[in-house]
Length: 600
Image (cartoon, rainbow, N blue to C red; front, top):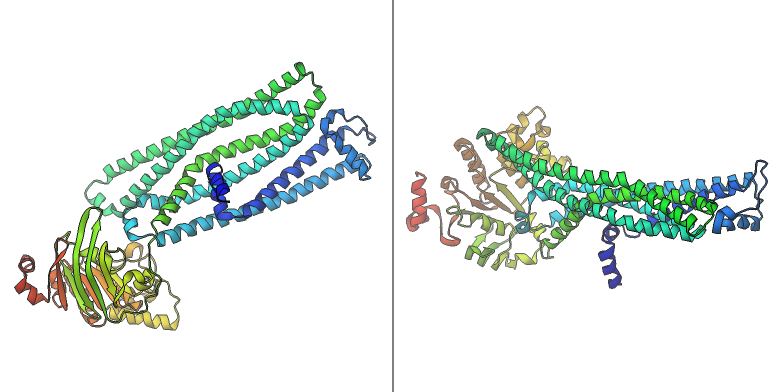
């Protein structure tokens, strides 16, 4: 079974890819397509040769030479007791094409349903895959690629799915018509197949060029999306420094590269569309001449076979057209496969034991962290007690943010242990531990939605949740501001909180963390971007929370952590000193110098 699986993956990689999402649904879709082709083929076979056997009075003629090997059909009708007259023939034709219409409806509807099912699974796999993606892998990922794969590439994969199965259906029709034509006139069909195989070399060359361009278009799209995201994110800086036009030139250059690749891909598609039918007709003409002048075949049998072959030719043209469209989207399909594999490979490894509640202490036991060959933290030994307020200070690059990232479970130590209530964090399910964490960053996280949804993270506005919401607002000292808004809790904050000030955004962020009923509050430079008055107000809010939560603060401004229970001084990845503010001023020359430089 595994050998068959390997063969399927190697030689039918796209079909295997779709099967991995749809399973046996593909079998039903395939069977419906076969039935559509069979009904159409038999309907066509009965429509033309049998009508030729009926004269103007409706009486059957007995000459069936023009049908070749298909002459068994009149005999079959007579054996089942059906007279060969105009009414019977037309009735049978109507039945076949009615069955074809029924099968066509089933096949088309199933394809639409399966397409939506497929795309839903693609999106869900991406969403869940990114949710389980480790933070360490995320920070090293290409954000443009992630954005483009989640948005534009999904639509291209949807198109690829549609093109692939339409091409497959046309291929089934070709097989049905060619089989019937071969049964009627094997020599003629063999000549056409040989000629068609020779012309296929030309088609394959053009399709190879199209596929290579498809990969280039996908890569260029990733780059363009990444640059576009950064232009929006850094718009204020680019605009204020006059660099926005230079950056626009870079975007334009990338956009031109993308469009040139798309234009060349379109050119190859146009060439294929233009030469496909003339080349096929050339092959058919040559086959007819060989049949008539070399094999001395009667023209009547050839004409009947051509009637079937004409149907096959239409289907072949459709198959090649949609195959080329599929190949134009194949780069997106392969990118999606690689992206899913990357998410799977980068999945966060976590324990299984649920973390219920923090009760005692956090212990860093000879903890170290390295990124590649660079040591960031070395032999950290520290204990943080429940409801204690700890401040972490140090120069830029001393490892403060890395330490916070380890404490929040975003990064795993490369050596040593992180113990929560005397249990290694690796034992716990990381998500259940992180549910007990409130995290407030320098750039407040505010969603483009109402105040209520920002604080409650889209909880239902039940009486209980509204009460919790209002309590969180009071603890964050933002309740009065919210109640002054015309829409109160339903006031919209705008994109990135554009409708409120920096201090109000920070308070809303704090309220969200407090609404969650957390054990820990981690603050990474949470007030460094605020003016002095707003910073003082936020600091008062934090002071009011002291003793109620286990608080860990990274601070650049030492005035904000003066009342912390303990201050941890990091210097080049190691703990240089630990103590309260006054102790460190006296005992640590490094800390004392930092205090002097900040003027207090």
